[in-house]
Image (cartoon, rainbow, N blue to C red):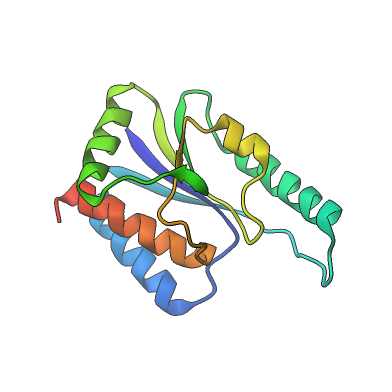
Length: 152
């Protein structure tokens, strides 16, 4: 099985990129992992709800174009279910048992995920009731995956 991290926008901060690269290198020793980035749409200053919804919809279409029909999709969103640290490995194993082609984690952009992406998700995962920058979320998710896969 392959693990995909499908995220909106590029990571600009070098310290985040370095940690992402470090975690991916460790995970690749055990399992195939891919980081797929879709372009984020610029948010005009003072954009209203209608424009924000169009931006989320466009980003959502881009995300969905990278998801295979047999992927087990995990959307990271506040309204999702939290998984205890020790249970994350079992969660990944259960996804493997489903005989999916890939376990795909989806991280939205600054405005979050469009409802079509959330509807496509097989599971909604929450790391916290707080909101984190989407660049940092990649680091946090990869750290959890590495711990689960590599037994740290």
